[in-house]
Structure formats: structure tokens, C-alpha cells
Length: 177
Image 1 (tube, rainbow, N blue to C red):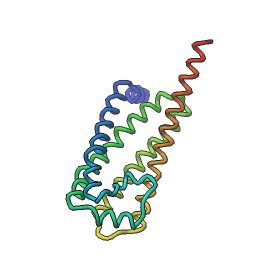
Image 2: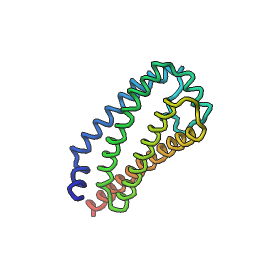
Image 3: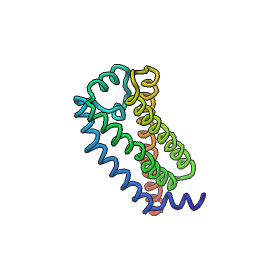
Image 4: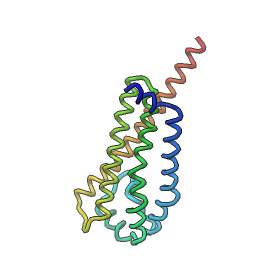
């Protein structure tokens, strides 16, 4: 466990995983998502509906989505979106392990929950895109996982940034004393 903690919180490991995560994010945000959105008459993919979506939105999105857009979503965007959480979770874990123990445990828990919500969201998006007919309960779960992912991400980033600011301020005051 100690060796794993040292590896995950290692600066090189953090930078390496952050570079991969940012590369994947850039590819998705600057190439794939715009292509899917254009193929869906400007509608947003499910992941970007931070406040969720309903049966009507999903129906309209699927009706607007061209076969090429669906192909990009299923065969390029979603596979990358299943890999992406691995790398950003490793980055968040590495950052969390550098925090004081109580805060670290909270950040690690939030990271795990974020990872699970993101995977659930991706899995449910995959099912929605492949399924014949729409299921209100399935869409409600997918929407809830998108909202939960968004909230967890915001809370986690706020926690980590706040903890790092407090650590820096504390260090600054100690050095002046």
C-alpha cells in the first residue's frame, strides 16, 4: 500500500496521467463532440447536459442524430470516454494522496464515486444509443448519473483546490514565524 501511494502521488506519474487525460479530453472536446453535435443538428451529447435530460430530449437527440454521428458516438467517443475516467481518476488520486489524511480520504472517496458515476453514465449512454425504443427509467438513471458526475466533479475540484490553498497559506505563515 505504501509503495502504491508513493507511485500514484509521484510527480512524474501525476504529470504523465494528466497529459494522457488532457489529450483524451482535447480529442473529445475539439474533434469528436463537435462532430457528433453537428450530426445531431447542434444538440449536445448526453455527457454535456450537466443538469440532466429527459425522455423528450433523448428522443429529439436520437431523431436528429445522423447514422454517421451515431457511428462516431458509439465507436470513437464512447470508447475514449470509457478510458478517460481511468486517467483523470489516477490524477485526482495522486493529488488526494498529497493532502492531509482526513481530506485525502474524502477526496479519494469522491474520486471513486465520480469514477463510478462516469462509468455508469457511459454505460447507460451506450445502451440508449443501441436500444430500440426509449425507456423512461433508463433515461432517468442516465440523467441522474450525469448530474451526480457533475456535482461530484465540482465538489472534488473545490475540495482539492481549497485544501492546497490552505496548505500553502499554512506553509507561508510557518515560514514567517
